[in-house]
Amino acid sequence: MGSRPAPPFSGSSRRPPAGSDRELATLLDSEWRSRLTASWLIGLDRREQFRAKIGEQLLSSELTYAGQGYCLALARFATTADAELLRERISDLCSMAEQSMRPD
Image 1 (cartoon, rainbow, N blue to C red):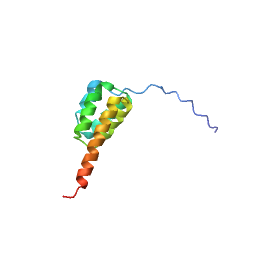
Image 2 (cartoon, helix red, strand yellow):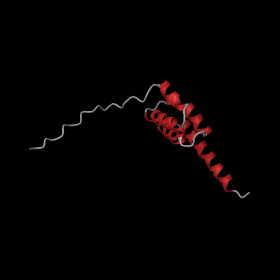
Image 3 (cartoon, helix red, strand yellow):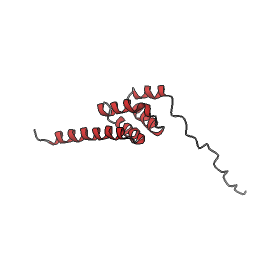
Image 4 (cartoon, rainbow, N blue to C red):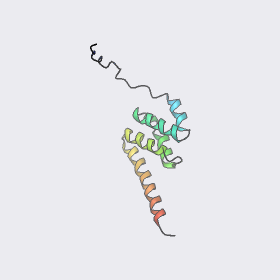
């Protein structure tokens, strides 16, 4: 029995759809796993119409793990406004760390 070479990859170079804006907005209003997923999809697809919502959620810091996705999305948008939101969040985290290290 001879082995035949594998056929060349015939997949499409297009990315799969990331979901509708409505679906992503619903995910952003859910628990942390859904928010993390939505923000990754938003960032990868560069859906900048979600910038304000993602920035608001990042700064409110309601759900810790979701922040990872918010940071990715803002980094993918890559504007000065996005960098400012990230800087503000980092500043908040540094302030909280300093406060927790102060003796009572």
